[in-house]
Length: 200
Ligand SMILES: Nc1nc2c(ncn2[C@@H]2O[C@H](COP(=O)(O)OP(=O)(O)O)[C@@H](O)[C@H]2O)c(=O)[nH]1
Ligand SMILES: [Mg+2]
Image 1 (tube, rainbow, N blue to C red):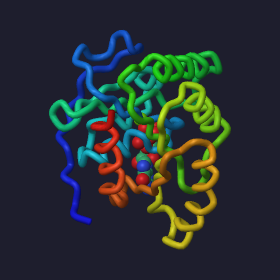
Image 2 (cartoon, protein in one colour):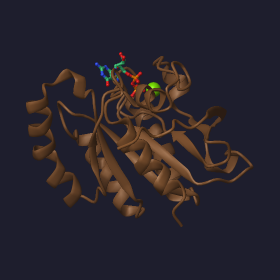
Image 3 (tube, rainbow, N blue to C red):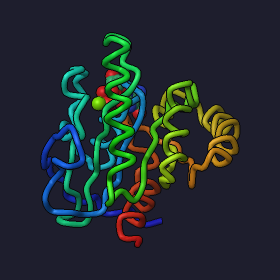
Image 4 (tube, rainbow, N blue to C red):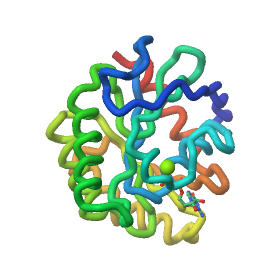
């Protein structure tokens, strides 16, 4: 497969709610996952940028929806708040869940959610709640199983065969392995995302 051209990307804004999202409406592809799973690293790696999405784990920052404009005016990548950050209170965690849920409910331009999982662990309890919310709001989603560089090829295949069927039965349209360390899987994921951004 020929290498996919990496689209241009620029940060647009951070906002707490869909009503405050950028005025220019474009298709949206949202990235969700538990805190520290590698969500910001994935966005940076896909776009071949070192610090576009901040990898710093400042709890105050992660509460916001971060919008990045991709490929000129092709679409937005939306970095959703990471859930399950252990060092914040239950109340704050619940509040972040509300932000994510409100986004899934209210975003009229959302085309696809990329749920990021750790290929070594598969879905946690909070990921299952996220999957449940995706199903309630009837959102299309794929799972990206990241940190594949931490496993041998044999173990990657085993993890995929362990989780793929389960995730598809829960509604995932696709399950793809990734490594933000060596960008392996980038062409496949970019192809899939760009297809969704131009779909009706
Ligand atoms: N080895 C490896 N480490 C990763 C990968 N993705 C993220 N990390 C590391 O995991 C930690 C959390 O990553 P970050 O992108 O900030 O996670 P976020 O909280 O989900 O945005 C950082 O120390 C990253 O360097 C990956 O694909 N491979
Ligand atoms: Mg992050």
